[in-house]
Amino acid sequence: MAKKIIVHAGFHKTGTTAIQSSFFAAKDKLSKLGITYPDVGGKAHHKAIYSLMAKTWGWEDRGGVLATDKKWQDFIKQIKRAKSTALISSEFLCELNEEQIAKFKKDLACSDVKIYFTLRPLLKIIPSAYQQHLKIGIKSSYEKWLHSILDEPGVSTITPSFWVRHMHADVLAKWAKHFGKENVIVIVVDEKQPDFMYQEFNNLLSLKPGFLKPQLDQDSNRSLTLDEIALLNTINKKFPKKRSWHDYETFIRNGSIKYLTNKVVPEPDAAKLLTPQWAVDIAKTVSKRNVEEIKALGIQIIGDFDSFESAQIPIGENPEITMIPVDLAATALVATDLRVVEKLPTRYVANILWKMIKRDIRKKL
Image 1 (cartoon, rainbow, N blue to C red):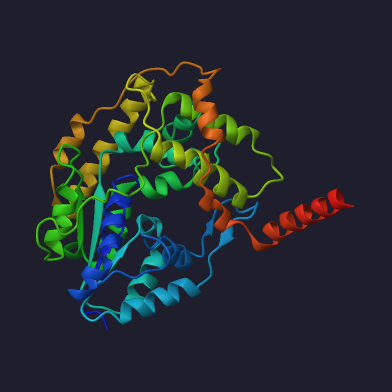
Image 2 (image 1 turned 120 degrees about the vertical axis):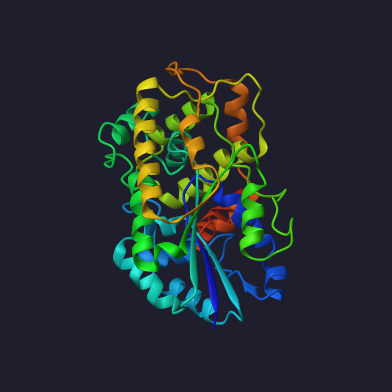
């Protein structure tokens, strides 16, 4: 039974993938030190948390996968087998409602639980979040999407999960209510110090400096250029309705677009996504209110919260993109990693093979 549990519960778009890659890469070494980082099929624990939430991964109406309770139960078994300390990491934990947080606490069955949240300015999260939503198939322009989340902050008509994740003070208040404010800690991400987050997790896990560190083979998941955004948005609009989430995830999300963001280095002068001044003003107002409310919660804050006021992103109006470079289109077409074949359903592969066999037979007759 774990005597202590460290939970990294979010937030989205705060470097979570990078720190999870370091946890996963070090899991065997961590185990020797008495720290269990459960393996549930991925570098993070998203599948287990989806299982807890009974949430669908992908498009609910076209082939999305509804998580069952099994992965959560298997995950809890690994936690309970931990010799000393268990480490949990998934930014989807920040989406849990009060009932789910209560179940999470009950199932952990441990008296010593610390909940950590990594956080960066809302202003910097917004353009990153839009690009992330594009990668699950939304068809809205950036400007239309901005209106959907900022015309009435707290409500989002296109991506309802946005404010569930990013009303940061509300999320932290819920976790403080169930685990106690003394057990909820915010780590303010410092982009000027890329190693800051690793240093903090090394400290809180009593690891030597440099034990957890950036991984060279991790997904870079860089920001998309304006041309790439236009390409993906157009793909989303033209992706046939009869095709499933599995097809989209395999060939677009984990195929051409993942290849672009992980393997292709854009030109230094490539146009970037701009955020209009009106959206920046609203985001700063919401962020300021969140910061004030978080400070009032009385939870521990590691890092410089006051730096949020000076956060900056590229401001302006985006030109309409009607044409994209031929090289970009060609790169996207040939980008699919051969490993996607491993994710194709057996029935689909068998059907293709059968067609090939029949074709070869006809040629020989």
